[in-house]
Length: 156
Image (tube, rainbow, N blue to C red):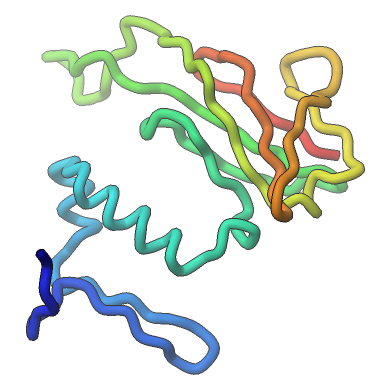
């Protein structure tokens, strides 16, 4: 059984109206350099503990190499999902090489209900709007149809 240590690796403190988390080791650097999945889990758990789900702008249930960007443009919001995972590194180039364009299946995103309720939601590259949205506890869950490389969700 775990016990409380006199020398914790991670601490969390309430300060004024917020919270501060301190890591006693370079968890971000270690994750970027080594790709240690335990560090990713620690970071995810820490961030999830700091921000309630209904306060998160977008949360993605997809492979970890999916990059997500959210843009506001005039009266609409655009959620870009990019899946450009490298297949290998070329011996002649420092840039990664993509030999294949893998298909992403079964991905979904959740967003606060008030951002999507009573709005048209569609994919930029497809005709028609999305109507299969599940709402629960102030959260909207949107299933992402399978895609390769990228897809863009438009909320207007």
